[in-house]
Length: 363
Image 1 (spheres, rainbow, N blue to C red):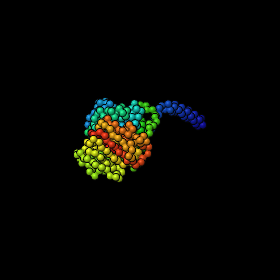
Image 2 (cartoon, one colour):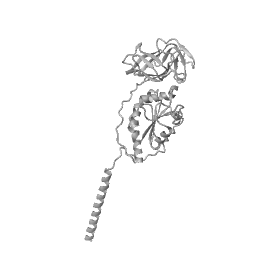
Image 3 (tube, rainbow, N blue to C red):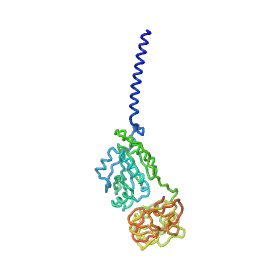
Image 4 (cartoon, rainbow, N blue to C red):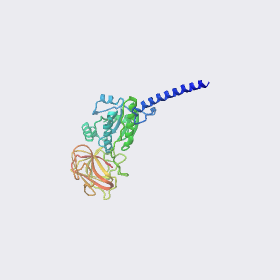
């Protein structure tokens, strides 16, 4: 019995030693393999909807319909709903173009869905000029009839949806901001794709860009078109809006209300804008913000005055030459860029008949 127990113990010891050796070799081989940056766990996608098809497109820019369909397959897709005269959209573009440059080769496809707010934004030449200005090299589709906008059930500019490589919408963000959060989602979905397709994905830091800091309680966006201003009119003249009529606005009160604009001169009241019909005209506005932008169309000049004096370098927007705004193409122009927010009286002296003003936006 003793010898038998000793023999059994020896055999058992040898077996354990062999097992430990095999396990050591196996674990060593695992340590030599690449470990992904993210721990990817199975995801229950039953609660996610799939991204709708892109429909009703007037123009495909930087792509073709066939090429875009092929690129969407197996890609992580960021759908950016934007329009080129929207300041909130414009502020997001440095981040979006940086993500395109950084992640395109790793499986990220960015699609700009250009859904216009104003009629002039339906012109492909205007959109292409904006793309060149902002360095957009990813595909942009012109959703002029807002059919893709409706397919996404969207109501906002800008809005970002991110779909995973299987087409499920995994992220939805309205407006500016949340850039780090958005980029982390991109990285996580690319890691999922990498694991599924057995490809490598290098670890990377987040894009390091400074985001715009908004003024709280700033003047809200102001619309000069009667249709867009319906239910939220801030026109201070007692004549008010008169749809599709040319109205002569004579004067402004001695104490204008803040956040309201006042017209002087003869202006055609359109659904989207006010169009100057007299030889010259004025728009007066008392606002609270650090930044003021206008959307305008036409060819001519506007002189910009702040608190009764030609605007100085301390507050001068980047679109100005001194206190002069030269308008050559329809779009958004920055006319005030101060370091801090304050109440100011802004006066635009419109020097050229035919100029249209659509909206003021603030930051």
